[in-house]
Length: 429
Picture 1: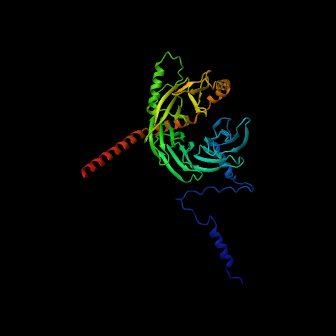
Picture 2 (picture 1 turned 90 degrees about the horizontal axis):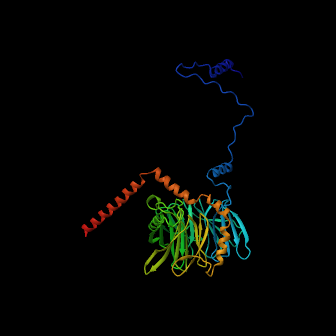
Picture 3 (picture 1 turned 120 degrees about the horizontal axis):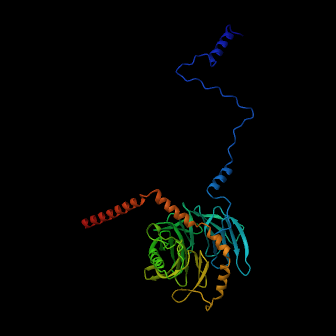
């Protein structure tokens, strides 16, 4: 049934709904031009997959797979049966030593490593990386991937197996963390006291003590079970005296490589490498960009635990690495030729190894190593991780020059609070 006038009303409604029916007020701006119709096959480019975006971010952060053949960290197992190394390609290689070395595995790492250690039982390799994580890799099953052991907020610089069931890790934020092993989610304690990044850790099994070296130029002894600091040794005093005598001694004939600068204040020495001899209670320390090796003796008398400076070894150039082998010989790797030097130990101190020594055959090994000059030339061009950390320290100080004043005010306020508390205690007593 059709209602009269329905067609006329429909036409009226359509005219009223048209865009130009109502006049546009003069106060409003003119309408924008009509948008051209989209082409039938035009499409908005799709966003790259999440995996590609992550790869691009990884390349920007320097975590890509490209790298050199540079060895970042290496180490022998406790028994000397295994040898592990991590290179710049983020690959962990495990070797079985002996008359003929055998490569057992090559496993991929997540990030570039900073330290490698074996457990006391040689059943696992612990690897610390730049992202602040530590992974555990099995030696009994070389084909297995590693699993995450623990993580820090900042970059891990070193790790060390301590007593039974404990592992120590140090980071860029002055912290030393003591965790249970293998259940590292359970934290035993923290060793706090350093004023700068903690670059080196060494465990003394004879006295069950932990020794740490830092960018603040100090060595500290710890009761790592409770996190108690037992002693502090400032290496900068010995270094300042040694370098001042070295710069004043014009008859020595030793070259000045720009390393005879100040080691106090803002230019405090940075511990680069630390090694120890368990049988002689000796700690040997080298420093970044300094031609000096300091030798300390661990003195334990009653409740006293401290390090005493016993010897200073002056060399011709910056010391890259120091290590004491199983026979008690000290190996020193230098920046300039001869790059490797070896020292024997008498009853009191280290002396250069001579042809009359019982281990004189080690000198032939040293000569063979020093003959490979190309290897050391390539190593001289590589940037040290400590240089990056020290540059960050300088950048932070330049970015906020008033931080020292604020810290000084905080220290002053603490002293005022302590003095006030002492006065109150005296009055109330």
